Image 1 (cartoon, rainbow, N blue to C red):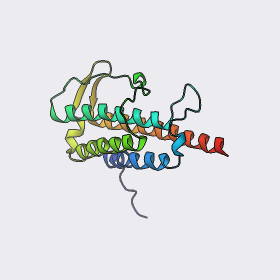
Image 2: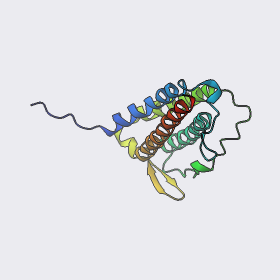
Image 3: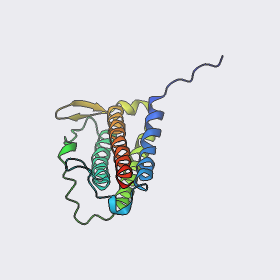
Image 4: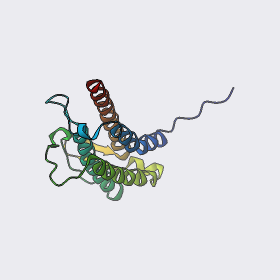
Amino acid sequence: MRPVPEYDAKSWLLKALRETSHAMESLLWTIEDDELDRQPDEAEWSATDLVVHMAEMERRYVGWLERIARLDEPRIDAFDADSFDVSERDGLSSPFDVMDEFAVQRRQAVYLLWSLDDVDWDRRGIHPYLGPLTLMQVAREMNEHDLAHLWQLRRLCDRLETASV
């Protein structure tokens, strides 16, 4: 009997983080252009809103990662992910352009994390409300955020497809 391979959380996280932009873009391509801005309900986001939110969050996460990786226990800014007003998209192009921006930011995050030694994953930043956060914790938070919004986008695609039938 072969031994079970050892679980490597860092490799798994890097793979998951790397694949998110491809998964999101694949889902976006299933939505008709005239439905990208459609909100199924007033309280729900459109596909464009979701992509704008993800790009904004990624900018924030990359800022955290860079500060923690380069400085000794830096203070990292608090932000409320639900407080971003995704309707204020003045000057933004198509959701696919915003998706490209997200993908560039995500590659930057993955390359930074990939370059770290094992001990560097324990580097910490100090969040004003959450206290110390390691790079591993930030990477896990990014992945959990990705999964929640990939699921949300998948549900939106299903609802739009059902509505068009």
